[in-house]
Amino acid sequence: MLTSKVAKRYAQGLLDFTNETGQTAAVFSEMKDVKKIMSQSADLNKFFLTPYIDAKKKIEVADQIFKDFSVSSQNLIRLVIKHGRENQLKNIAQEFINKVEDINGVQRITLTTATQLSKENLDQILRSTNLVKEGSNFDLNLNVKPDILGGYILRVGDQQVDASVKTKLNQVKKDFQLN
Image 1 (cartoon, rainbow, N blue to C red):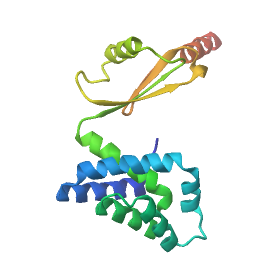
Image 2 (cartoon, helix red, strand yellow; image 1 turned 180 degrees about the horizontal axis):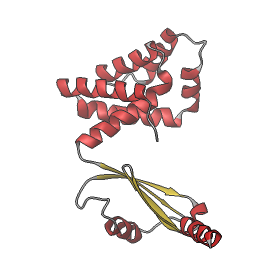
Image 3 (cartoon, rainbow, N blue to C red; image 1 turned 90 degrees about the vertical axis):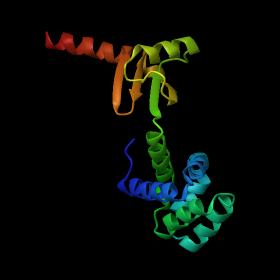
Image 4 (cartoon, one colour; image 1 turned 60 degrees about the vertical axis):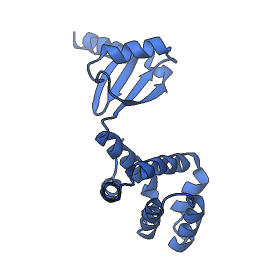
């Protein structure tokens, strides 16, 4: 997923500030909550994206929703809304999470399969590749997409291993067309 320059800049600014003040762990947890809330609430997203609602009203609503957050997180949310970037709030939170996880050495792994996998199969796939560092922490996102027919697609950071049946069939089809 591409992240906007705006989200990266706000996230980097927040990270720099929290590192200086020693609040990175607390804000990290709160940004996970922001991402979760923004992902689950279509009404809140519509509210924030409505152009004819002024920033003061949006800030009032955000203050109520995020009232239990630290002052740093609340100030960031207010600043984002004040600058008219509330549509980037979820992306800013995700980018902050990514930056903190990068600092902590957490690998982001996405595994797409045709069906749900057992724990043994999942472990076997992760051990079979050299993309996943042995003994490292990782954040695993599992996706089930029956249209890949079988096999798996493993994405670690910006590298990908496509061992899906669909890709192999497409390659066979392409080979037949060339001959």
